Length: 331
Image (cartoon, rainbow, N blue to C red; front, side):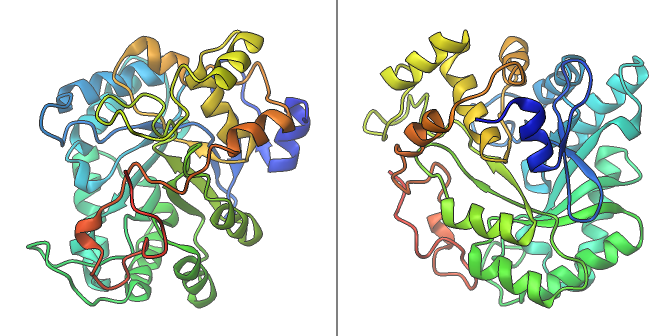
């Protein structure tokens, strides 16, 4: 494949010194680090507490992360903000060194609700602005979670207003399918800078990734490990962490199979969003820039694709603008 320098140039990626991730230049001129710490782990019963999110953010920044991903629905924006504040207070970074992403939830899709929702997120984050604000889903809901019929183009007008006010530098979408992304792109004054959606070896999303590249819309890949470690479902599709092909690659490069999968996404020009609150794994998940996979190795991993989702909110499948209608159901 390309050497790292050539790859970076080809993708518009700019290397940063030290352990930090390289950055990709967005279509609005801003630069986004190509690995983000995923949060949102404090909202599910039995998951890590939101206080662990604060510590994870500080740990991540201390080992070189400069991109943190959160959302209003994760209920951890305050803890993310506290972790960021801790890192700044310790002199690890300045605010301008960081790239903070958050997202607008489905019940705030009315044009006039977007700016107040972002202001509330900023209050919780204790920030004056975020670097990236995304429409979390194209699907609108009312406050009680029932379906609403708001057109996401109206929501996008609110996003454009938030950017004009200086509350956010870059705006984008999340979980938008090809038709929805193209419609926003064709109808907007400010083009979406990012589309965040699930990408991993069992959900390679090649057509949607191809469209994003054609439109110069960067891709953030959530659930990047897929079913690599799946304790909930023994019948989950491969690859698992002990898959022979992945183990062979890991041995070749002196990495873990998880690192191989993250590097696979980077080779495809994507920004993975690995989640962890374990300091060792947090560090491991950004230790990705001293090796490269070959084109053949990327192709081998892509062959695992089954179009099967880890995240599949079927409870909204009958709502207007539900994005996953053409996808196979999750296991």
